Length: 454
Image (cartoon, rainbow, N blue to C red; front, side, top):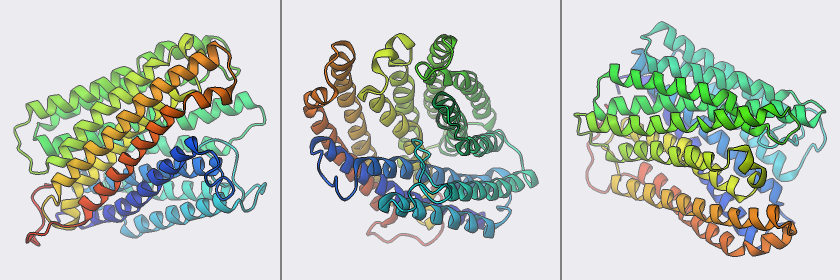
């Protein structure tokens, strides 16, 4: 390998993929609970399963981002990572915090304790000591990568990546602020949840996608960087005030209905720009890169992010529509496809690209890797359509006709069974991906570092 410290990324990717397997498996169990409500109800209640599912998703995506940063920054900055020891310390803190969260959730220990017990805020249920550990790990990471970039070459990719990572860490500080007023609580809560996934995470996504396009297509850096700045400008312009689409019904002033409707409608633009960027780069590219699987994941990322975050987000973002649809299975449909397209596919793309380099071999089982893409993506897309149709029925029966919630849930049983079937496909696809990445092909493979990841 050209830069020895790039190997740090391997450990982050391994832990991330282990949590990915846990996350989709718990998601499958949750899908079965929808059709068999008493399944595991005494052992692990549904609310605990949901916390584990959503928290493991967030943590493994963040680990993927950290691993991606440790992999691409040496190449972009043309120097080694500032401190290998700090990178290992950061990973250790994150793993310890993850284990602490799992034990706390599963056994419900320290219930009600200010410092050690879980909190009741969705997605931010982590005990305060874990939150503090996350902040320490984030500070270690930011110091490490910032020192690397400051001492080396500065590029648009490193600048945007650092901006996204710093924003991500600073916005997480709002997780510590938990006012007693519920409307105020939700207002600041969205500062973390929305401004992460529709703000700073989009910057990280754009930077990593730009790096992949640069390496996989051979297009001039100048062209890639111009696209990158346009995408980032559109993401920040629409995403920040787009937070307003979460403020419709939580007790904030009525003007947020118009601000949220207008700016969140514009959030389609950066995702369309990302999709156009990816395909234009491939079309303009003059490089026949041997890692076809990485290119497939990158194109899939841009395309599914546009439909999941862009199109499906727009479907229920206008306040006149959202009045009826918020909190239904339509929200779940949008959330699943948006997260999968924008961030799951992104992480799997950079992992697919980096692994031949990190493991010192040719691009492994590319056919199996690409099969996992189609299997997982088909499962998530089918799940999205099923939940969309189910959510439409739910919206009409529950919000328009005023039927009882549990009666409506019984009417959705067929949709839930189909969602469970889609979940099986997603889990099989995830396991196939992990197998394809780590298990070498049977034929003799050169021990020399691969040219596939150059």
